[in-house]
Amino acid sequence: MTIPEPVNSSSSTDRNESASSTINNSNYGNNVDIDDINNDETNNDNNSSNSNIDEESPEHAAKIAAVLKKALVGAILLGLIVFVIIDASTNQHVKTAIFSFLEWIEEHPALGVLGFVAVYFVATVCFVPGSILTLGAGFVFSSAFRSLWIGVLLGTGAVFVGASLGAIAAFLLGRYLFRDAVSNRFLNTNDASNNKYKRFEALDNALRNNGLKIMVLLRLSPIIPFNALNYLAGVTGVKFRDYALACLGMLPATIVYVFLGASAGSLAEIGGKASDIDGTSTDSTGGNRTVTIVVAVVGVAFGVLAVGLTSYYAKQELNKVIEAEKQQQRQNDDNGNNDGDEREGTADGAITSETYDV
Image (cartoon, rainbow, N blue to C red; front, top):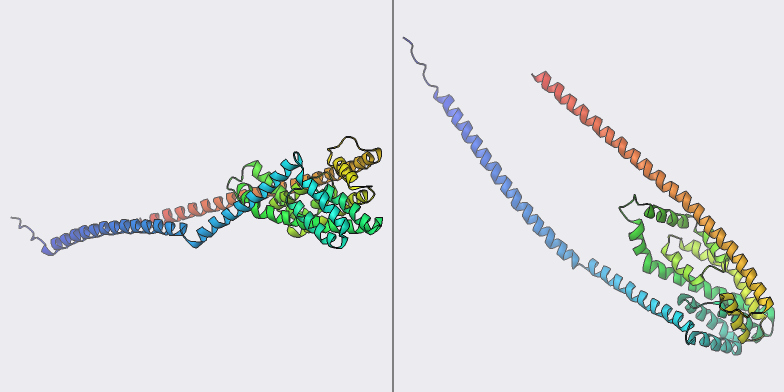
């Protein structure tokens, strides 16, 4: 007769406690998950409220104020430029005012030098063509001091100082108004694969690293639009020091134009020579036509050199950008391969450990 084994109450109790513990742990885990979800929702609400606070923060208000200030300055500047362009083809009030100002300088040469610098500064910023002022400086100062060479010397100095200060002001305005927008559009972009952005970046780097050489050649070319170049240079990465030093390239053309003005017989003749230089007159004398042709040929030569040098440096910078991207891609590939090897080594170690345990 087989006697049944007694039931081990302690073993049964242990199993019950283990099951109870498992249930409690499961419930505890569920509670933790719910708490985490509630905390995440609370954090999201806090983040959204913080973003709303950031939008109303002083920094955000300062950014809006800066944008509005730039818009206001740009609108005023654009209005002045549009007025000058329209007036040049209609009533010509600006041209009449310039001739009246030159007549005043002829009667007041001492104050006229300072006044001329100030007017040339404003004219450069407002896109007023400087040919009449440059030629007129030679005439009025030579006539006032009754000396050709004194007139050429004073006229050249006044024109150079006024034009340089105006060019620097226009450069700073262009950088203040447009540089950030251009950088965000073409330079600080995630679409690095686009060739358009690469070329602009290469051109910008070329002007940044070789701006002095390029700007000097552009200044030596009288056919390059002087007023437009001032603002365009501000948009690019040209260094301020290189841009300011490159203004010395304006001296040769300035001396030639001031000398032509000093050799004129009257202010009316100055207007005719200015039209010849601007290309708006067809009935110029043989001498003036010869000078105009020589100046144009020299200007074309320097302009071609400037464009060629810019293209050469831009190509070099573009090659650097492409090579840097290739190196970055190779480095990323190497890092990916190393990470894959590490993961494979970790997996092999885990399999070996499990085999050893078995």
